[in-house]
Image (cartoon, helix red, strand yellow):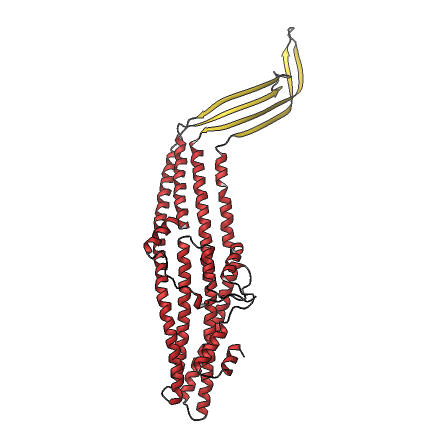
Length: 459
């Protein structure tokens, strides 16, 4: 027998008191070992696989700048060559006789060279492109962190919602069970009708089916959070409705939120950096029409370099400027430029489309918050009214002004209102989280604010 059923059976008083007590027991304070929102966030930062992949990707993309900078720095190289050579020489002496000679010797060559780019338009564009790519990577990392909080909040509060729904169904099941037993007893005494028994039985059977679905959903939502924090989730800190701050967004003008989103939304920042990177890709393509100039310094030493310089040693130093001028490449450079311009147009249009979508999302979440506050307040009043209606029906039953079906309907109305209220609170919280995420302000301060709405796990 469950704790809720035990409580329902032993508590005296009206159906309202039984229902309220059962829900209160199911939604008791978080037990020891429960994690709160801040703890879940801290674990997700170090354990969520998607965020760790994004962090590693950013680390890799940061290396683009030093790699591009290296193309502007001096390049120093050395070479070493040594070999054993054999030369057979045949000649005619002064007497006209053939002479054959053989030489065995070692040939060697040592050198060191320095090449410093003086003018390479391609390398300059490559460096600026690398800076834009790193800026895009940093913005994407910020976006992934904001998305992590949104995903975690969704998983956390969906799990709390599943727990609340399960608690409500169990409370409803116990309330219907009590009414079913009472209907059967009344019918056995000749004071009730079979309709009362059948109606209570049908409602009770329905809650049994709903219980199975709710239990499955409860396990699934906890496993969804477990995927993010990478550890079993046995219990969560519950939302305390009295602590929930029903505050409208500030600033109060939605247009200001849209302006903020267009300026600092991490996804839009990344796309602006991508546009700049595409512009530098065009500059790299255009560089194919420009000459290049390098400063070249070389120093080399050779010994017995060939068979006419056996046992001879040469030390050579060179300083010069090497210039390469492109003349014709078959239209390759012009094709690259057309391709780069087309890519710029594509990325610009993608940015504009995403900017409009984000503006729409900001309006939606802003409206969900403002309307959510009014809906929560209305449902809180509806909950009080439903409680009074159930109490009135319970009191009217002995006087004959209300039937057992009326009591069952009142209980159903109260349960539905509690469920709708819990869903409205969830919608409000997630809308607030998503709105903050769209303007890149889901920081630890905001997380602490949300965490303060939860109860403190007992340690």
